[in-house]
Image (cartoon, rainbow, N blue to C red):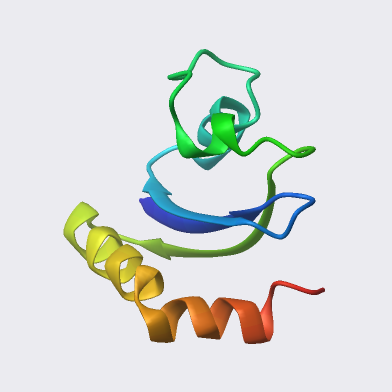
Length: 86
């Protein structure tokens, strides 16, 4: 299984990605596991990155397709309108 996920920080910045291990990936975003110093979530760390939305897919291709949809203007609007200020 593959998960498309959306994280937010205290500044309401969002990060959209996909993974096959969501718990491990969130720990990496929050600096609990080694990650690149130049990564978006490392450079924009304002408190913990928290999960606000996720979807599961059977294939990597489906997850990548959905990630691209969520990164579009309409996808970001969907996230902001429905999940950002909860």
